[in-house]
Image 1 (cartoon, rainbow, N blue to C red):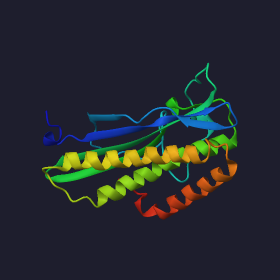
Image 2 (image 1 turned 60 degrees about the vertical axis):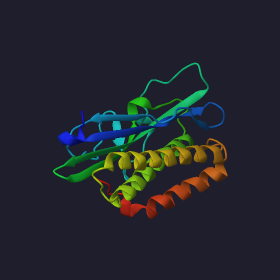
Image 3 (image 1 turned 30 degrees about the vertical axis):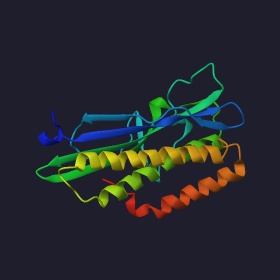
Length: 207
């Protein structure tokens, strides 16, 4: 069944690999590759409102340890785990293509044991990187020239490319900061991310 021919929206959702922080001096490692889900969803525009499970990214709301609500995993050296998601919903109705982009921190899939401000800042930056990717996705989609014959493949290609860029950047961040242990490089990365958020502000109001 062709969902778009029925006017039903399609959801593309990628989960950023859980970021695990180990008991070694403030270490974070990525363990899981993103996964892709395609499904029919409500056509209502999602509001950037917090729910019991999700925190949409906003400049006014940074995560706190109280938001890491999943039960900690025991029997490992990990002391924290962060999960974020980047979503794209699109719909073709009456010949008009519309889309919504989401960037969320997943409270019920994130947990922490070693709850220091330093580790928390490192984890917030992972969320910020996902937000940068949401803005990048909005930038790409806003310049897309609609082609009814290929739009589904086109949107999937654009989305998957942005997700791949996101995961590469997340991994580079962890590698260059030595999973937060290199405090000098960690500080440089936080400044770099803040600057990129400022530079991409025109794309922050994604639908």
